[in-house]
Amino acid sequence: MSEGHDEILEELVGLAADGLDELAAVDDLGDLGAAASRFLGKHSRLSQLKAGLRDVAAEHRATVGEALNLARTQIESAVEDRRAELGEVATRTRLDAERLDLTEELGRDRHGHLHVITQTWEQLEDVFVGMGFTVADGPEVETDWFNFEALNLPPSHPARSLWDTLYLDPDGLAGVGEEQLLLRTHTSPVQIRTMLDAVRTGGGPPIHVVCPGRVYRRDTADATHLPVFHQIEMLVVDRDVSMADLAGTIEAFTKAYFGGDLTSRLRPSYFPFTEPSAEVDISQPDGSWLEVGGCGMVHPNVLRACGLDPEEWSGFAFGFGIDRLAKIRHGVEDLRDFVTNDIRFLEQL
Image (cartoon, rainbow, N blue to C red):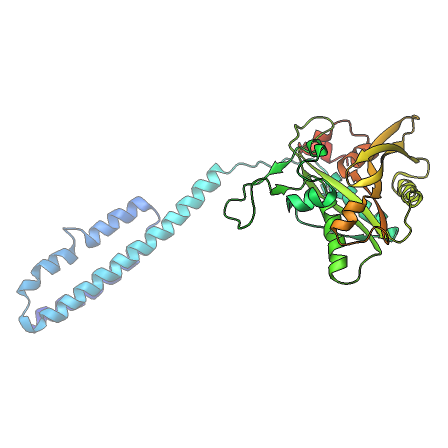
């Protein structure tokens, strides 16, 4: 029986080798299934040898059984490896066949650039930094105190109706009540934070900062309004600051940003956080005037809210819409053009 045992072991080695060679040569998933059936199916030689294992002498049965399992395992592994390889090839072939070229050749180099609002933002910062100001920023999610109360707008103040505020749900925030958390309606809260920080650190005024940023209001988008837009505000706090200093600073900004041919003027107005207050107009080449923002002397109540004595310190501030300044500078008629992402419009600026 020893001779039969040796013959079976030799045949199993040959079967495994033949199977590996044939499977490696298969180049189609359908042919792979047929090859696997020949070597591993019910009528395969391996299945026949397994069925005849009972006729092998008892002392050799374990050795033959181990060889049978090894041959089957080698062939099964080869089948799975080849199936994965052929599947990957089939996928690549299908993707190549289905591939579409969606690019458009315009015949010229295309270089991206910053959005016109970002360009305007950076240009404004450069102008003010050149005038000796530093840049400050703050969070876009604010509390009612920073956005309104510290700016002389208590809950009962009728001027609160001037801002269409987007309030946030304070659920889960300890100590925050309804309508106490909001998306800031202007960048003026940064002025409050700047003054508070100056007092807290012991340095105090003088303060010369500009505060650019994104703001939010419950507005319907039209040619002159956007629900999300951009502002830049300027704050100066020092001793003996006057309205004449404010007017001179605005005129210097106008010349630096719009050019020497344009000038500015102030018209009396009202804002809760400044007293006296004014609207700022910029002259146009056709002789007309265009309103660009508001300004005024910082209200004593605002200074007190930030821990500054209005008998010792005074200040002035003004705020412009960055989107509106870009609109003026580039002759854009509709603010919505800045946000509709029409590539034909964006490429021009």
